[in-house]
Structures are given as C-alpha cells and as structure tokens.
Length: 378
Image 1 (cartoon, rainbow, N blue to C red):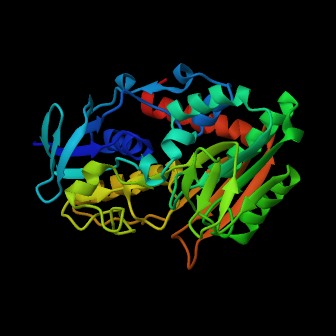
Image 2 (tube, helix red, strand yellow; image 1 turned 135 degrees about the horizontal axis):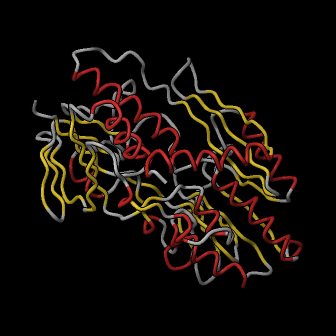
C-alpha cells in the first residue's frame, strides 16, 4: 500500500511529539519527514540553567541525529518556501510534496523591533543570549536591572518573573543585592492575566524579594547612551543592565507563505487545521488563544496525531484540543511551582499555582527526562 507522506516543519515540542505519535500508531500507513534547520533541540527552561552556570551549552543540547523511529526521517534543512495550497515545501537542499503538511516552526525573535535592544540589551530566550548574559553578570555589582517584556504574546509567560527571582538569588549569593534594584516592566496589567490568583502569588513572591513590577507599560526604545528605556506612553525608566524578552513573530518563511493573518497562523482551535486543505499549524506559530509554551504545543500534537489517524481511517476526531497544560516556575532555593492552566476546556480560561515545593523541582527534572527518552531514546 502507498504510504501517505506527512511533512513536519520544525522539530520542537510539537514536531517531536507528533513524529513520535505517528511512528507509534501509523508507521505502516505514513512516512514522516521531519525538517529542522538546527542540529539539536533544547528545553526552554534549560536557558536558565545555562544563564546561572548550572549547565553548559553542551549539557542541554539533544541532537536530532539520535532520533531513530520507525517511519520517521529527520533531515537538517532550512525551509525556504511553503506553498500551502499545493502542500509543497522547498528547502536549501531540495523540495517535498506532502499529503499532510504540518507547520510547527515556532516563533522567531524580532530583535530589531525595539530600537537599541540589539546593541544595548541582553536576553535569555536563546542559548547564545543566556551565555552572553551569564558572562556579563559577574561585572554587575550595583545599579538597576530592568527586565522588559517588549511585546505580546511571548513564550513561557512566567519566565520573565522566574528570571527576576533567580537574578535576586544570584545577587544575594554574591553579596551585592543591597546595592542593586530589580524591576520588571511589561504591557500586561498583571504577570499572568488569565487569573488574579496566580498573578497575586507571583506579585507576592516579587515583593518579598524587593522586586517591583511596573504594569501596563511597554518599552518602545532603548537610549543606550543615557541608559534609559523609553516607554510607549512617553515616559522612561533608567537602568544599568537591560534584559529584554524580545518581540516574537512568525518565521519570515511563514509570513511569505500567506499562512499568517494578523501576525500568526489562524487555525480551527478544535483540531489545529488551517484554512488550507490538509495543512495544520501548531505550537508557537499558531494563533490559538493559548499560552505559547512547549507543553501546550506537545498536547496540540496529540490532537493533530489523533485527527490524522481518524481521517486516514474514515473516522471522526473524538477529542478536541483543550489548551491544557502545566508550566513550571522556579522560586529559588531549589523550590519549583507549577502553573496548571486550561484555556479552551471550559467557558473561560482557568489557572492555578501549585507549590512551590522540592517535590515539584524533582517533577520538573522528570518532565525533561521522560521527553528526552521518548523523543531521542536517551
């Protein structure tokens, strides 16, 4: 029998989980080509491990060459064009025609969207950025660290506040916290707008550590000479070290394809299908009303796998995408909390904070270990 060709663009949480599920359930019926321009994967939370010297870059990279799953072929190639109507993908090394096309290319960072940020700021949303900030921190012993959330949406909503808490601990350990200030500025009214309770828990943790959150303000530009962050409303905030959460956007190849509308790829929230026949979009690239975080992309992959299976067998998808998942947040001192959220499973989004505790710290380690074993066999 002729196998259906499923082409998955992007080997992050969504792409890896989808490829694994299709291998488990449809290896005799589909051939999966998994494309990514990189040679390795890393968990989002591993950037904090690199930033604070708990791990090196080599420690946190999981290499795609280790993938060995029936019916799945990984190819390291950069996608140069996508034709969603024809389900044809061109790369820097060839082209692919898909029976089913899955776009899971994630979100890119638009560093230039905030003038002054590239030359005068730091970030820890990439491994290279985490290494650069790690190397700069030993030279910072007084003044103000300003953490600016430069746009919405952004990956892992607790991460800016997690970073602030861990920076506090780092400065305490060095004995210089009393000579420093830490502020977080963002366009949201509260750290996690989906629920007041979770936001209040985070605000309490910040206040206990002398960290200020400045709400409803967006940094529009950095004056790198005067060390001032100029706000969209005309005000400004001074800083000595600026750490930004970059503006997020779809990859340029997705923008050119015509898939994106108003910045992201619109999908049917029940099964992640786009308006193009047999084309799905999931994970950070998709315009679902769900937080951009790996666990939600992983859960979306399970729904897409079920939908592909149902359609191949002439059935109808039974379960729909709930937008449910849990995000871990470090509170320092070996304590980890977990935000349990459900965006689409009820009349309105819900979220609650569990912990923090040392048990959840162990659970976070196990979360990474189980996925490393599942996706890479290591």
